[in-house]
Image 1: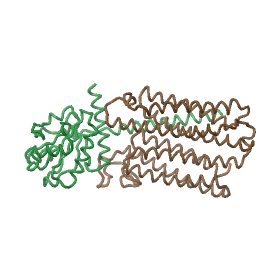
Image 2: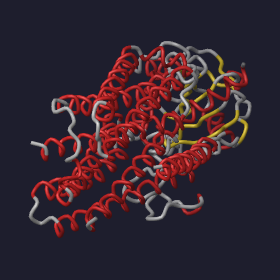
Image 3: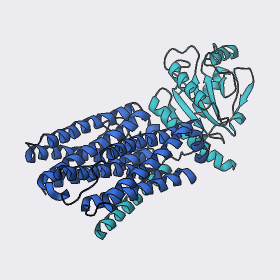
Image 4: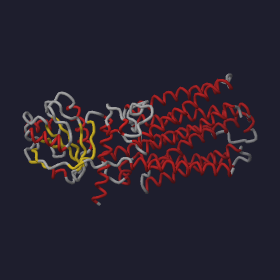
Amino acid sequence: MNKYIYFGITTVIILALGASWTIKKASSSHSLKNIKQVPNFSLINQNGDSFTEKKLKNKISVLDFMFTNCPGPCPIMSNNMNELYKSYGSVDQVQFISITVDPENDNTSQLKKYAESYGVYDERWQFLTSEIEKIKTLKQEGFMLYAGELPQAHAIKFILIDEKGNIRQYYDGTDDASMAVLRKDINLLLKEFKRIET
Amino acid sequence: MNKFRSFSNITISFTYLLIFIGGLVRVSGAGMGCPDWPKCFDRWIPPTNIEQLPDHIDPALFNIVLAWIEYCNRLFGAFVGLLITVTMFLALKHHSSNFKIKFVVISAFILTLVQGWLGSVLVHTVLNPITITLHLILALIIVLLLVYGSQTSYYLQFPNSEKKSNYRSDLKTHFLFLLGILILEIILGTEIRGGLEMIRKENPIVDSQFLLDMLGPFKYAHTIFGILIALISSYLWYHLTIQEKKPSGLIKVTSTLIVFLVYSQIFLGEILVFFDVIPLIQLFHLWFASLIVGLVMIQFLAWKQSQIVNE
């Protein structure tokens, strides 16, 4: 009888040790590296207000490049962004930014219309525009994304930026699995952010 | 002990280990460690560094630790699948004339195939909560079938092992009620876990204590069922081992273990509610629950055997 009790206890202890080692490994594997700092920039949002890199401070931002007349992957990206926008509705610390790569057509009123078509009336999701050269430079040098033949050949990445304005990770903005990872990473940054705040 | 029985007992132990590993995948968040199925990042052995990733896969999806946790789960799952297949062939060989044993073991084998397929559905639906629960319930059913097969084979060889005992004969409904409510309790538990994750997704910076408060009625139902389970299992323990003058060794061991595990479960559950939702405790809370289900099955079959031989 005693033999079985010892066997049971030993099994539970071994399983517990193995499991806690695995859980620890798994939770530390989630940490995100700093990729680079977002450079200074100055764009205009759908309400005609200025939006600079300062607005990235003290917020966790998800940013993408798109244009409103885009037939290809943009609707999927905007839908994914909209899903995130809705599910983080109660979290003021998270904001969403879409920068147009077609400023010729996407002026502030066009962007405002586009925003409203997604039910966006607040500033948690902002749509930014400026001169094409400015956007090109920001995209290529600031975010290290290809900016060749704009607007058609624009990147489909979502970029996660932390509360200090550091780029932390890139995600495929058209892919469900990548979106699941992005959600997890947003939550991770929020936890880090909260720890710093308190 | 015939070959079938000793092998199927080994299979049962490894199936329980697999349930533990499956729970570990869940609590460590490694369910999507491999974004594809059955391969992992388009490879039969997952990449050990990011350079080995195929070009068409987004590197942001790759987390080496999570990929290997999920991969070990799949590998171990395949191994257990193999064990169940061998168990089935041994049953067909040693119990070719016993319909019951053949039936349960072949069912276990078929459900194992379904279980593998369900694993692929889980990955394709990016961990749909209902499928996760189904995956667990199916695992429990497979274990119960294997237990049934093994124990039936035992009583074929030793029909009189419960002959000396004379348990109360009106306990059948108690057993069935207990088994049913245990399964329900496990489903409720997975609902609580899933609910917690959903709320946490939407309110990522809220404390888990506050999250539990937001869960509402599920939590109370889980507690009430837990108390019911404690009452019934204690009642059975009392009638099978205290009231009965000569309980068999098997009944004594299973009854005592069940009661011990049920009260441990209440304790672990309270830790989760009053301290914090600790992943390791969550894991054992689930695993103990699945052990209890198997033990109640053994206890029930032993009691049933005594009724048959003492008729």
